[in-house]
Image 1 (tube, rainbow, N blue to C red):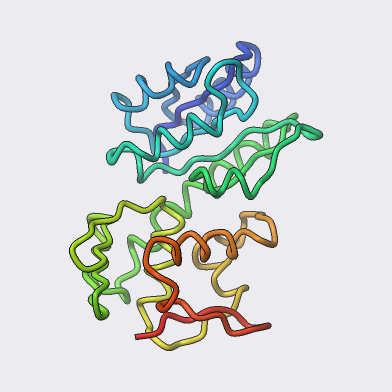
Image 2 (cartoon, rainbow, N blue to C red):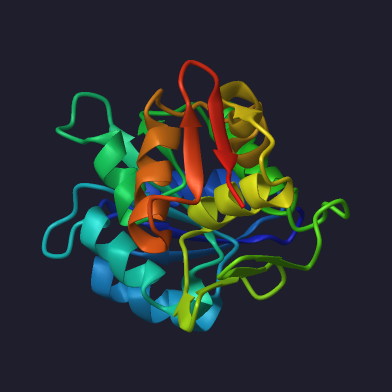
Length: 228
């Protein structure tokens, strides 16, 4: 986790300096950008492990920037956390649909900030390091390559946002097994990450849009399963 690379994106210099100072003192490597356009340029060169992205920015806002970042194959893997002020007109669901993994509310205390960042980075390698999940999973027309973060549906190759991929990988690792919502939260988002109640629903809906509605079944009041 030490020497992990973090890209901070915010149009307010004071916030950039405050966050970068507190992260650099913990051994993180920090790069800064003040606009969405600058973030895209720096991210492609820096290839961060985590991107902390302000929602409300002039010009290209955080939502659009996140979508553009996720459209670049090399930047599909980093975790993206939205930075949002309490009371802003911001929908967490819209953020997840744009490709974000989590959100951080500001103002935030330095110790809380560092704790949240460490929790996010800790989650980054949990599924990658899970030896119980095969490197390549083939289920009917669906092929999931864990190492390359690629999903093939028949002949179509899909590049999924990180959490969509991890959710699909988890469900497909044990076909026909019902995963409870709590189990999914803990394994995909982590016990230390606080996300909205509809987070899983949003990701399931987007997976169904891309794969078809027949693969993931809802078990009402319990959770979800991947159907062979």
